[in-house]
Length: 117
Image (cartoon, rainbow, N blue to C red; front, side):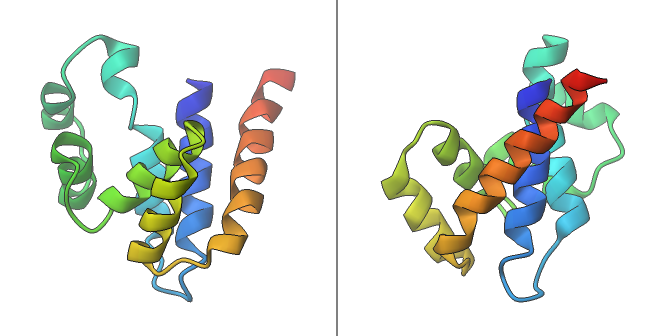
């Protein structure tokens, strides 16, 4: 669950790096639900049929395609320290790569703050 929360915040923050073309709310939801299949032990497709999420989010989570899918690829690349793919995804998304480490650290810190409650 902590990973999902960190992904949500990272996707939201990364989306804001693209000069205002952000889908911050959708990106947050994308990250938040990116591991719902593992948490609930059901298929992603089955879970998406039950949730009132946008078609863009569902498409990215089920097929890995669409306008939001690159952000999911970006965050998973960061988690794996796959810098080559992270750089490629950032370029595809039109993101300033130098801002991403700060987004990632802020997302981790934000997610970890919930364990203090």
